[in-house]
Image 1 (cartoon, rainbow, N blue to C red):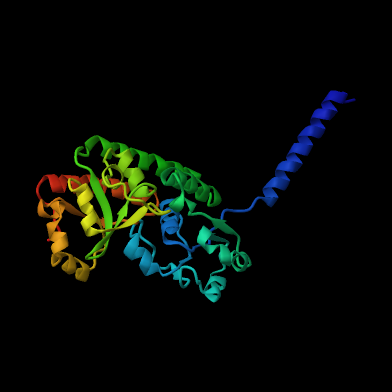
Image 2: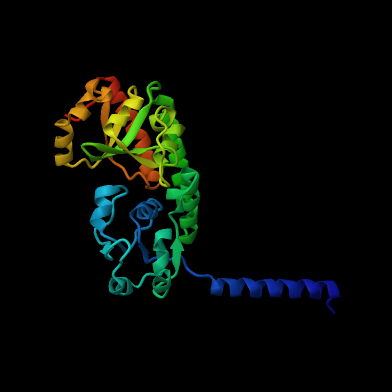
Length: 302
């Protein structure tokens, strides 16, 4: 006869085995057919080793984010906030990654596939920390936690290495050129500002000029107001259209800026200002290269 204690243990083991089998049977497999309705989140998915089956306007990703490269077979699902629902249905996705700006579309999108909303880091109070957290969230949804750990570790290593070698000294302004009279400057609340702090470079948008930034950490600044940070180097993001470059070259306002006169202007590669951790790695490295170029007398748009 079995003892009561042994019978209790056997019943417990049987119950645990049955629960494990039930959990295994109901566990959902990781999604493999993912559609991303945002270019910056597409970058993060690619950095995690997963490729989407569809995104809006793939050429726009190539022109504004660039890396990691987008596979050529990724389908075009239409406009960013007006996706082609027929194209989405044809792709038969098992996950749609959307942003808070897609809230009005959530109900019809959820009829096609489960949705995951990410991208709040772009307007968050602490965008870099939020980006890291959202990278982990995406990784958990896509069964890519090991890839996320490696990506976070490599990013921390790149930023640390750049911080050790980047020349200190002058503050810097990081900006897009809107036209020959205005720049979009990245200040407090932007990812670029957070990375500048991590690599030990002073952002003149905060330290000198104190321009008020919007929810995404940028401010539109007329050229004459750059004189509030006359000692700052100027790093301009690309793409910079040929006609805009020509208009700047012909502008007396532009030519009168101290940074332009003293060849303290550098062009950065195409880097998404609200992109993922790969973009932030590239930005840190590009800023170190820009400072070295300027210090060696090679700054300018010519």
